[in-house]
Image 1 (tube, one colour):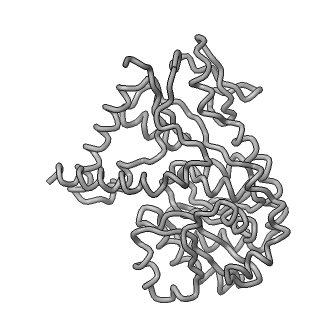
Image 2 (cartoon, one colour):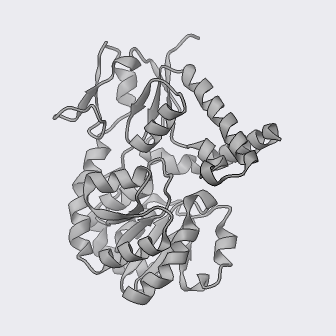
Image 3 (cartoon, rainbow, N blue to C red):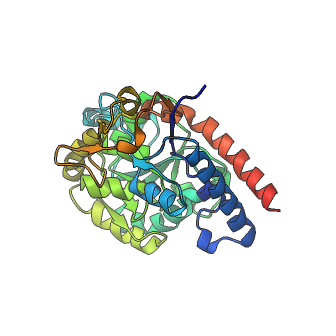
Length: 329
């Protein structure tokens, strides 16, 4: 059936193979090169490739992928809401978390997420401010991370399948930390903002863009644990409640983006609401003539479905990465 399609590029699998190509060995660089070739091939098969952040859009364009369109993900603002902060004490008791300043990482525990960087920096943050750290998630690096010297000082919680429970946790902490410098978007970071929790992020990647647009947080120099510790201290000594409250409208702006709109309107020169797009007008709309007509969206991932799809997506990416490495050999 000859049906025009678009592709939502949310998982940057060449970066899974070689998170930092400039430091990777020959085998991984070659495998990543082959993966980018596969991405370009897929890009030629669709009417447009949708990218969730400017960071990803630029990577795709540098790799030779044509017709890249920037479309953000969104969050459920009825589920992730600052009102949940009123139950913060009860949420902490339920999960065995301490009183006092508390920061949280939510995400996959894998090498490319740079959790090692966070664990290296945090003991100094805790020494200076008393702020403790909780990590929420699963992944291939979890056991290794928990075996690190000093890891017992951190609080480890499993992946939260219950979305209400995750929303409670994000509203129960003082700061959300996103150490990864190659994050495609960072959905949990946006959910934290919607919950009234400010962000500390690496200065590169999708979460850094969220911090810049919202003003509700700060960034540190990517890959630098000293910079992370310094910036965390500065935030923790400030008014985090006020900072978090300032960021909530930013989360609301992003929640207005609907990828499905692109599939519904088939008129030439249609306009899509995407206020973060570099060509957006004062009203937040951008004209996207290269994506018309589109009758179907392939791999449409709403914010609500992203976590449910995560486990399957990760397994698929691992298989693809292993296959690329086999080819490279």
